Length: 51
Image 1 (spheres, rainbow, N blue to C red):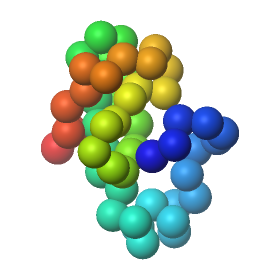
Image 2 (image 1 turned 180 degrees about the vertical axis):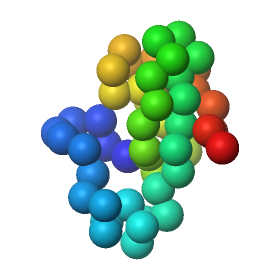
Image 3 (image 1 turned 30 degrees about the vertical axis):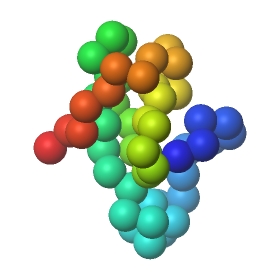
């Protein structure tokens, strides 16, 4: 997911199979896609897929 701009559109999230992630540093949760996920709140790449 591109970290530039606002949150993704709900329909787009579903079509792209966006996953929910949690940042290990700031504890924030967010939706994302791709291989190199970066927290949009703090910029950390220390994220895990959330269940």
